[in-house]
Image (cartoon, rainbow, N blue to C red; front, side, top):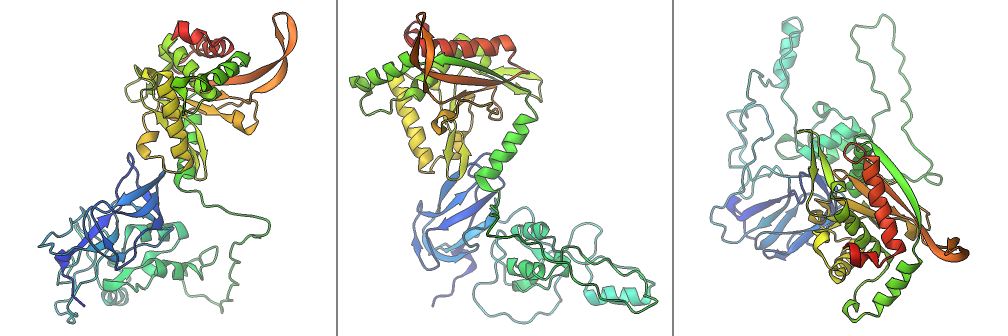
Length: 467
């Protein structure tokens, strides 16, 4: 077996695959230790707060180690896989800005076997010496024996203990479980605390920590019974961890609902002619092979209404106290996926012809259903459509996608009695709901946009005269 040198091992760190993401969950590994990988080969799939993304490795080599199992949430910038690169000639991994801090090692150390030295994930390969740089600043690391001696001989004056060694994900796990890292005996190389150490320390913990003893008791203490560990009936409850897309959606909706003052208006409209136009377009040669449905014409109607009322297509700049009117429309389409609600958008939808819009809409829906929507596809939206009618719902009061000024909800299209040309007849009817940010959209502007959309869907020939 060939011994790998420091230069032959490359550490691939979790990248920021979105805009300002801080962590991602490893959903699936496509490689295992010993597998050969090539530049550009997908090695794993991760789920960020925005979408599921496949990560390609940026070099050739052999997988040496997978640092985290599937289902682990890893901070951006932390190494997730080590690859042995043949003939790497000294290309050492890049060192980060900060490293774990510890007390200086003793002057003499036990000799270590030759070969690859222990690696602290995210901080490159250790050199032959295990000496670590001391903590900066006035703090001084003191061995445990010195601390005890100080307590015994100087009336309780205590020197500061060294900071426990642990990787960022392990620190986060300890914080979530309420485990004190300083109380853990590390089992990892070079005294590093592992995830297993944290779980082991958390297992016997009771719901409430015991209060510290500040004075000797005057009477024999009675051992308190441990508090029961919190549990629930799995036959009656199911608990689902909130993370990834669902966590991001929840945070975004709370932020939007309590930041932008929402106003919602409603209109019920006869869309019988729009449905007839949908059937005619399905027979049109220029539209063959494209996804033709009422949502396509609703999207086109909204784009025309925005063209007639451009101030609706704007955002609120809190920092500069400005209304930013967009001269382009990135049309968001809310999509329910197994991972949660996502809102990819069609870039520059305002400039697309009806066939181009149909093609873009079809690609967007297909990609979302396959769970392959990229983070870039969900950024930069200006207005959104959510079609709750596919679930048989009449309408709703939609919450704005963060950073946008308006969202249109489309209800179910149903055959209903309707007064048409002075006579009650069965007609195809739906209800539209438009929510908008009242800081930059007043009632008049919001009403005009909603009325225009309704007028086009009632008389779709207006698409020709108004577009």
